[in-house]
Amino acid sequence: MAAADWLEQLEARLERELEAFLAANPAQRTLLREQEARDRQAELVGERSRLQRQAEQERQRLLALAAEIRAWRQRVERARAAGAHELAARAEAHGAALMEQGRRSWSQLADLGQRFAAVEGALRDLATAQAAAARPAAGAAAGAAVAAEDPDLERAWAAFEAEQELERLRRPG
Image (tube, rainbow, N blue to C red):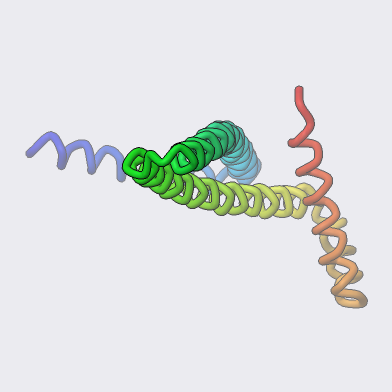
């Protein structure tokens, strides 16, 4: 038997035993899900921080690039005013290359923004799911009765809880 086959069989057996244990101990399944949710939340918060740092670095690069482009435009004007047309053309080509670099940086910043929005959405979804899971069974039954009466209220409340959780996560410390 190959080592990979043995490892796969061991993994499958452990997975079955874990499922049997969790089926016999629903409280442990709940704890496991809560831990997985906390782990996912920590992962998302870390990703959000990483994306924020990257975006700030990209913004700083863009600001520096904008200053460099302005300086080269002034050089082009000075060269033209002095009649140094070949130098002006070379400086203009360099400025165009810097502009292209700026367009790429803007594109990267937009990409970071989209990834950040996706992480924020995942955090909101997770917070909503955690808030829903935190409700006791009796509260869930009462909540279902209320939702049957006013489904918009239940959705609004879930959104409110998610927003509160996001605000808590955004606070430093």
